[in-house]
Length: 250
Image: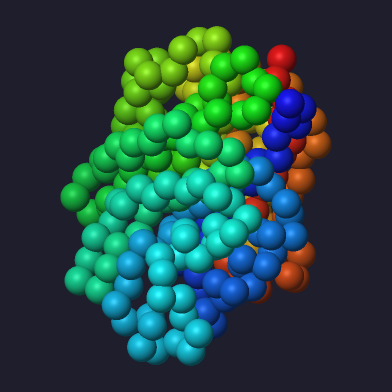
């Protein structure tokens, strides 16, 4: 029986530090291992890139999500969103527990930004219902995000049973904080930092967090400890801070 599930969300900035000064994938993997999370939601993950292996020493030959999962997270899924000449990137979910099914849905609001949501169904030992995990990275425009949130709500209303535990996590780019109201009204989810601290966490930029861009929304679970993973060791890895939370079945 898994009494408490440790979840983390992190925009890894394609494995490069602020302003792309350094390739930091090995350090990111070390930090994620140290957290000992059960379920990790990742954004801006390269599935392939032809040039990085030529330009950077020790760049992994395998996809970034597989390199990060290594032997710790036995299950992983990747959703390819943005495709370009040298490769592609998107969202990924790493899990210690069996992923029963997965699907990546295109939620691009316009031709200039390719966005998707990765929806996995996960069997947590001892939980009565399967967990639905949705990893998202929303667009930069207010109008585009509104459309993407509506598409996400439509999918969840259609695909996720009301009695199933649900986690939606990722980079919402929602600096105006308009997403919570819509998600609460349509899906009856709540953001974990709002529940424990009154407001979503300031997560961007990681060197001096001001904007509340990254979120973890839940339904059908109890929320325990929440944590903003900040400080120098994290700021040197990505422009976003990571967020984590512990949840347990009701």
